[in-house]
Image (cartoon, rainbow, N blue to C red; front, side, top):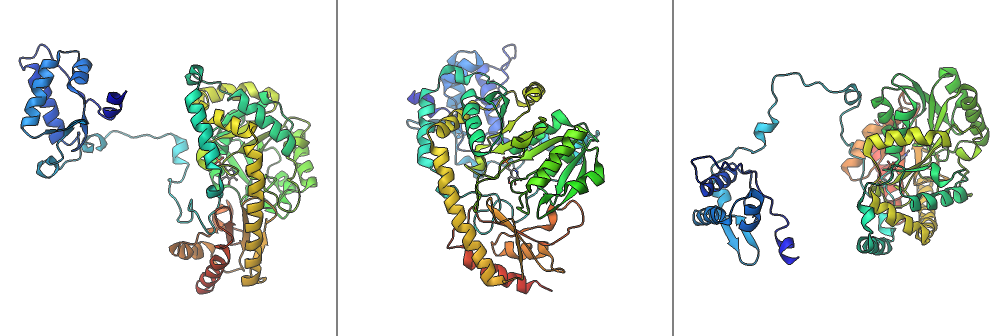
Amino acid sequence: MQRARKTASAFSPLIAINRKSARPLHRQIYDAYRSTIVGRTLSSGQQIPSTRALASELGISRIPVLNAYAQLLAEGYFETRVGAGTFVSRSLSKRIVAPQNPCAVSTQIGSGPRRLARSSLLLPPYKRDPWVRHRGAFSVSQPALDAFPFKIWANLVARHGRNAPTHSLEYGDPIGLKQLREVIAVYLRTSRAVRCEPQQIMIVSGSQQALDLSVRVLLNPGNSIWMEDPGYWLARHVLAAAGCRIIPVPVDADGLDVAAGIERCRTARAALVAPSHQYPLGVTMGASRRLQLLQWARQTGAWIIEDDYDSEYRFESKPIASLQGLDDASRVIYIGTFSKVLFPALRVGYLVLPPDLVDPFLAVRHAMDVSPAHFHQAVLAEFIAEGHFSRHLRRMRALYGERRSVLLDSLHREFGSYLKVFGNVAGMHLAVTVPKGLQDRQMALRAAAESLWLWPLSPFYATKPAQQGFVLGFGSTTAAEIPPAIRQMHKILLATRH
Ligand SMILES: Cc1ncc(COP(=O)(O)O)c(C=O)c1O
């Protein structure tokens, strides 16, 4: 056991042994090592397999390997460390005159055409704006990770690691782990008024995969889909990559404007909405809009994809019932995620599917990535079943509730009616709009240079931005950090007004 651990990082280089060659075996091994060291494919300090391991791997006796290693040691290419093994000599790095990068040859581009699929050309290049994925004021989409019950989680991880049955190492079920689907079904029925049975729930790697899968199953390239405007930028990328025709539908204080959607494209194949807490404006879709949307879907045969990413946190009333729970025609595909309520690196989300869609979703999911990884599903199922999840939700609701009130107070104190606040009754962010004429992106760049993360509102629009402003996350900003950060924001806004 001890031995295996010591040599765990010693990979064998590719050595093509030719038994018919006039060059003796030890010379072939020596040459192979020497050229990989000089060419820097093997780097100084890198561990070398034991003579026994290499001989066994090459299918030859140990003698030529011992001879080759002895020569490489004598010439200073290798060094041994007592009790640790054999390594590429660390003193070589300065002496070797072979400056070329070992990868240089493989990255050279030949003259032939390098055709890419249309989907990759339809997306903007992957790059992060300066305000994306930081922690602290006022980063968006970041939960209070320091409040996550990590000890409890770590204990469950350790327990599952120790007691994992052998069958848990096999390919899993494409729909996900039964125990996890069962506890999610109980949670959704009770807390989110979602009508579901465990066999309708599919575990996926976050909302992003849920949406990608939904689009693959339900839409053909060129099909129209309504999308909230402003809307979730990463969702727009999924739709764009699939070649969908995105119909931007305006959002007002009551959520997506269904009448405007019908006017723009009554025959759209689907609508993507976040009715509980619209992203980014944070508004909640009212009851009559919900019924209007469901009626449109029923009449035209459209699908509704409901993104319910952070509705667990509602501060002045109980969480609003899901759209799916009102649907009596099985037209809603419900998407949920643990990214906000637990932590985003978990990459676990779920779909609640109308019963007749389970089979087509299963077939496509199986073709995409076979099944979700087993381990964290098992840990999460236990975390929920033992009551840690509901306890964590209650604690976080109180914590975010406090942060939200401090943020609202600070905004009011600092800005009065200069900024208009939206969407503050739920979730981990709210939105503010600035007076006409101000440029949010320019202000956000200036703020980012001072490590203040103001996510500008205008890039969320697919059409000409109806308003400029900012999305302010309060998930990872402590109550004490908020007032000085708002004062800093005020100074920046004043300084960039012209
Ligand atoms: C609107 C919306 N939906 C879903 C998510 C969560 O995505 P995922 O589950 O892929 O982490 C986010 C995260 O920022 C979001 O803003």
